[in-house]
Length: 68
Image (cartoon, rainbow, N blue to C red; front, top):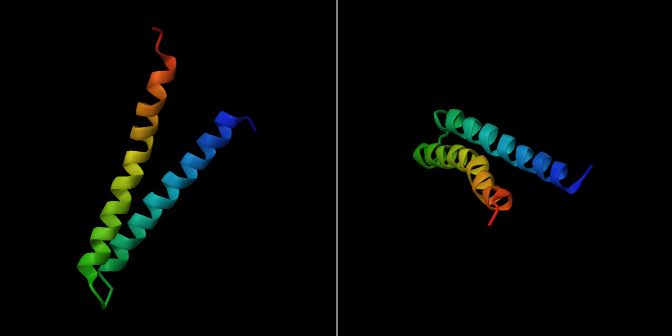
């Protein structure tokens, strides 16, 4: 694999782990005996981080394609 494609695979893996992990935490918070609110908030933050990964990647890559 080239450098760019391996970076895309790693970002997709990070996105999937954060999204699925956040969804699991949100679901598990309802059955959590200890601090369900904190587990829920951690899940929501993981989902927000998963959404931020492609946004930040697009923002970072936008500078490489500009001509000056």
